[in-house]
Image (cartoon, rainbow, N blue to C red; front, side):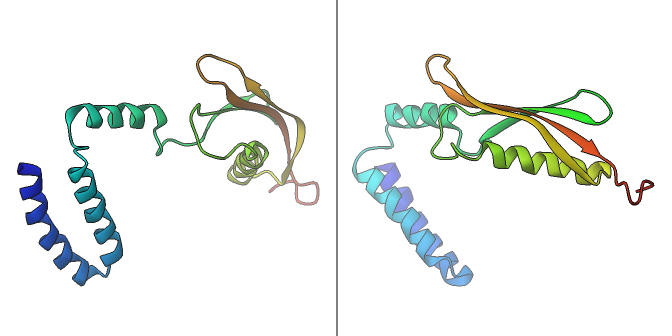
Length: 149
């Protein structure tokens, strides 16, 4: 009963804010979802606990790839990429993430370009969930035309 009373008090406040900020559809969807969850008794402790556990495991705000960068010498760098275990999509983006990080290092350190020496993708079959891994090595080079740059 207190949840329904709180919803009855919150709905007019959200409606007023929605008129001022022009976010009416988002607020209406959120309020509708809250009312539906309340009517289905989804605000009970076991449902909230299950939702928190699922959120902690899935963690939708975490980056999809964990990237480790190791400097091998003055011109060579190794990238080790590890995809998070539970995700929706992103299976084909290892090469793209690798290239983007290689380019960012080249631009930030003043290199003219880089060559990909090695790139491998695979699946690490750990329990309980397998996940994708990728590894690559990049050799950076300075400009031959303008060696001082």
